[in-house]
Image (cartoon, rainbow, N blue to C red; front, side, top):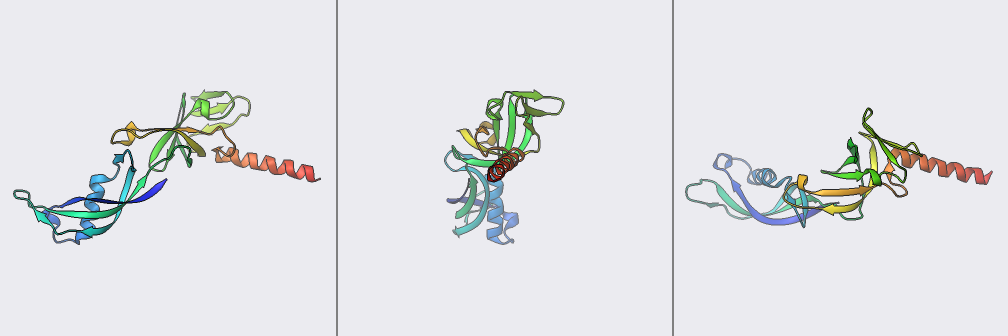
Length: 192
C-alpha cells in the first residue's frame, strides 16, 4: 500500500547550487538522500513529492553549504499483512517464485502456489502443478496475499515478504480467467 507522509528534517544545499530554484534543489537533494531507504514503521521511501515549509538557510563554518529545516511530503510503500497484491513473476527457483510487487519483491514458496503438488521445470524455468497442470512462468502477472512480513534493517534486501496464491481468485491472471470462464459455463449449462 502506498502512503503520503509529512516529514520534518534538514536539507543540505551545496554552494554550487545556490543560483538554482531552492525548492527544486531541496526536493532533488532529499530524494538522493532518502529514496530507497527503509523505515520499520513507514515502509520504503519511494520519493519526495513536495516541500510544505522551508526555513532560512544556516551556514556552517568550513562547509559553505546552506542547511535548511524543511517539512516535506513523501510517498512510502508499506506492504501490510493479509493485503492482496498484484505483481509480476521475476524469477522462478526450485523452492518458489519471486514476485515484484511495487518497489519490493515477495516470495511464493512452492507450497503456496496451488493446492497441487508442484514440480520445478529447470529447462523452461517454470513451476508445474501435477494434477491441474497449471504452469507458472517468469513474466506471468499474478495476484497474491501477503502472509508473512518482516521489514528489517535499512534496505529492501534484508526484508522478507511471504506470499500465497492458494485461495480463490489468487494466482496467475490466466488461471483466474480460466476459473471465471468455467464458472460461467457451469451457470449456462444449468440454465439450459
